[in-house]
Length: 89
Image 1 (spheres, rainbow, N blue to C red):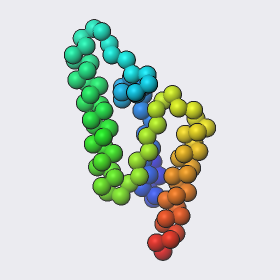
Image 2 (spheres, rainbow, N blue to C red):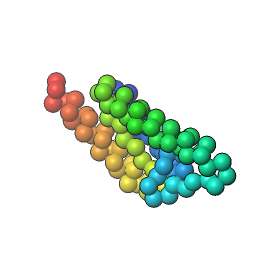
Image 3 (spheres, helix red, strand yellow):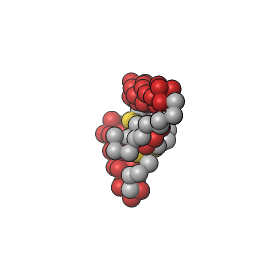
Image 4 (cartoon, rainbow, N blue to C red):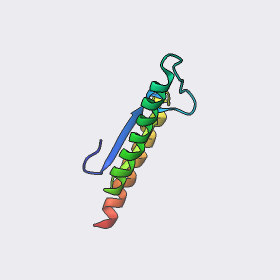
């Protein structure tokens, strides 16, 4: 989180948050798990919408994404917010 810039950074686990590339569905108690995982994904969307409505930039990454690329994207978001902040002054 970059509080002053209103940037929230999330790292989502592939299993827990429904990665389109790596998500799996447990066979045992599958209905319970599907409900649980669907709720996690809905909560992610709700959180993003809630923060966005309050002026926050939400950036999300999957746990499998390459660290250097994630860092580059976060740096771009920070610099973009800083530049935007300077223009408003």
